[in-house]
Amino acid sequence: MTRINIILAGVALLVFLLLSSIFVVNEKEKALVLQFGQIKRPANDPGLYFKVPFIQEVARYDDRIRSLETPEFEVTPSDDRRLLVDAFARYRIADVELFRERVSGGLPQGESLLRSIINTQIRQVLGADQVTSNTILSDDRRELMVRIRDASRIEARNLGLDVVDVRLKQTNLPDQNLDSTFARMRAEREREAADEIARGNEAAQRVSALADRTVVETQSEAEKDANIIRGEADAERNAIFAESYGADPEFFAFYRSLQAYETALKDSNMVITPDSQFFEYFASEKPQQ
Image 1 (spheres, rainbow, N blue to C red):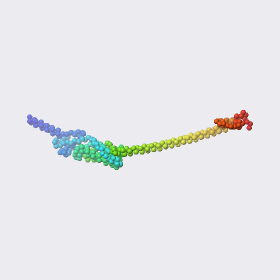
Image 2: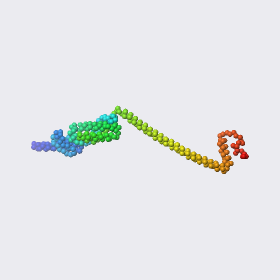
Image 3: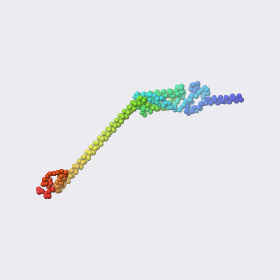
Image 4: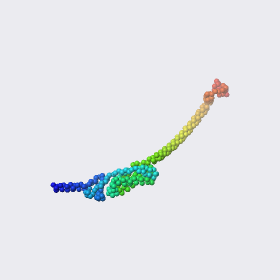
C-alpha cells in the first residue's frame, strides 16, 4: 500500500511539474519568460510554451491597442493667446523586452512616461513659430495632431511603445480671455457686415445709375421719334392745306375763317362793329370788293 502511495505521489508530482512548466499565450497578449527577474526569452506569438517550474516565471503584457488620456493643461501659441488643451492617445506595447528593460514599474509607469512625452510634444508643436491660436482652432489642427503623433512616436520607441494616434480633445480659452475674444469676434463680424453693406450700396448705386441712363436714353429716343413724326405730320398737313387752297381758294378762306371764329369766340367776349371784316361770312350778302 505504501508503494502504491509513493507511485501515486510521484505521478501527481510529475503532473504538477508538467502543468507548472506549461503556459499558454493567447492572441491578445505577449509574454516574457523571466529567470530570477532577468529576461530569458520572449513569447510573442500565440501558442503553447514551456518554462522551468519554480525557477522561471511568465510576465504577460496586453498586445491590444490601448487608450490614454492626458489632463487639461495650458499652452501659449505664437500669438500669446493662452489655450487650455487636453488630448487622448492610442498606443500599444510594440517591444515587450525593451518595455521590460526601460519601464521597471510596469504598465502604470509606462503610461505615466508616455503621458509626459505626449504633453511635451503638444507644448512644442502648439508653441512653435507660425502656429497661432487661430491655426489651432481651425481645420489646420489635423496637421498639428499628425506632427504631435509622429514626434511622440519617435520618443515612445525608446520605451518599447508604439503611438498609433494622438488627438486633441478640446482647445478652449481660459475664462479670463473669453470676454476679450468675444468682443474681438464681434468687432470682426461688424466690420465684415459694414463691408458687405458698403459693397451692396455701391452695387445699388451702379444699378440705379444704369437705370437712370437707360430712362434718359429711352426718353430721348422717344422724343426724337415724336419730333420726327410731328414734323412729318406738319409737313403733310401743310401739303394738304396748300393743295386745298389751290383747288378752291374761296372754300379754304371760309374754312380758315371758321377756325378763327372758334378760337376767338371760345370763352371770351368781343366788342366789335357788325360790319367788321372779321364777320364778313355772317353777312347775308358778300360785300363787294
